[in-house]
Amino acid sequence: MTGDFTAQVHVQGDFKTLYDQAGLMVRINERNWVKTGVEVSDGALMLGSVLTCGQSDWATGAFDDSSSGLWLRVTVAKGVLRIQHSSDGLRWPLLRLAPFPVSESYAVGPMCCSPERGGLEVVFSHFEVMPALGKDLHDLT
Image 1 (tube, rainbow, N blue to C red):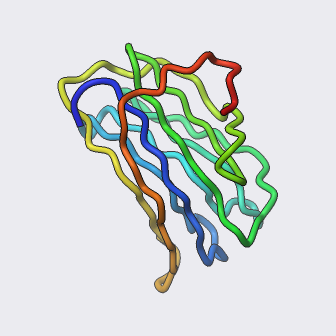
Image 2 (image 1 turned 45 degrees about the vertical axis):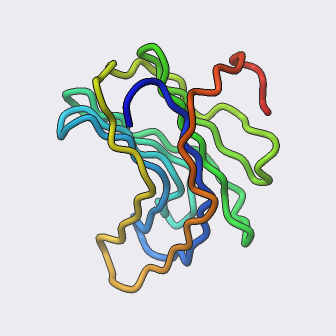
């Protein structure tokens, strides 16, 4: 992907074990990337993100487990990363806003892993990448 963009996907999975996770990843290289999604931590399914720009952080928040899955949206524009989530694909509250390096190109797509077990089943649907939406920070559409 070149230039500013928005990517979004619907994620549904069989998350049971510590660190089972699925979501979206944006990668410039091994030292500059972000992943966001749902992840099992401390016995519960959480919303989360890891931002790496030389070193990594990890941020989590409560997620009301929904059998219908979760929508995730990532926008990268003008050196800013915006992560949003949605239960219905209509209302998109902010999950994270952070600086993110401007790059000539980005690798972007769905991701999942289950480092503690085999057999994690995840369904990704409605994945799309488009020009950056450019919405106002408090526009939740």
